[in-house]
Length: 462
View 1 (cartoon, rainbow, N blue to C red):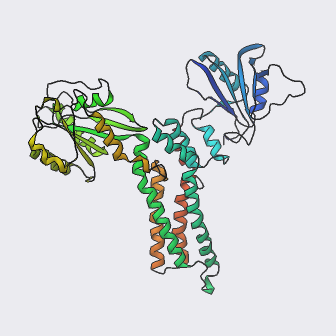
View 2: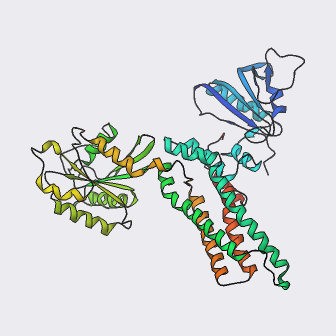
View 3: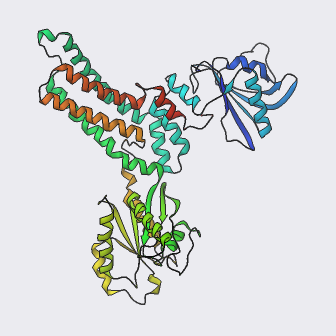
């Protein structure tokens, strides 16, 4: 109902800066612009503001000059929103920003809601819904991997795949719908064998997208790595060495770390979220036990676990027993455990009993001296194997994941229907369900509630 309003917002971060950009979009944009913008060196024979041109001039409130600015012009439909739009590049004074916004509102614009510029781009078919969501992901990207993932989705790689899958289903759905019009004549326009083959191909492609969510999600948010072990084995020292700063308190007193400490590190474009946990031991301290309980929660949430042991004080049997104990607490049995044999600086010679650990993944380090820390980071990078992810389409959005899972369930029902030779009208219902869920991803099928939830998470001005 507000789509015909002219909206405005600060597109750059608020506060003092060298320059600020104020964005305006809507059908009355240039009427408002005429009231507040005065061009310098204007050619009398060329009064119109041309699209995709930048003009130098002033923003005026009557005879009062507020600022000298650059005005970027984007006429419909060749703008981000698909509407008439312009951007004011002004000096980054908070006072100037506020005065220009007040002036725009006074002349008929209103402040944009979060994500309203991008919502208008979607409503005007400049972007589909998955591309619009990727805009927010691109803004929030914090590493090369999350940036690449968001950029690929924003450029339509994922959308194109979904639209192609949906179109193949639409073609068969139309033939089955046609059969319903001739139900009394008992004819088949849709070859059931071809439909079964298509469904098998679709299921494989959708399953690949569903399975990509685990990797896509960690690349987007950072790969969680839990650092666990008994008290005083050097977990906090290891965290500080990885981050190259004194992030965690290091003490010889056992049980110093009673809650989890988290920080991120980007290694060659991949973000890792390191979690230093409370030491695992039997304790009568209620607060420490809360910390130990949280440690097990973090182990469950982590993709990779670094199990730190004191190489001088820990036996191989103790390590094996601990790993068995972890399995009792963890549902995901495929979770990767890397044993970090710490405090090699205290050894006079290589420990003989650790030869039994050759069957396990062990890295020998001295966290105190920062020796072999690079072996840990190299191993973490290899475990992600991002070099193979650049050529495949991945999903990182939980809404897309849920829609694809429901699509696969509907396709499975279609397959069962074909195998059981049920009537075309019942098969058509399940195909429509699959089409519905695929359409939800790109916005071909959407509701005000879905759009509201998606765009409310955007920043104002985008």
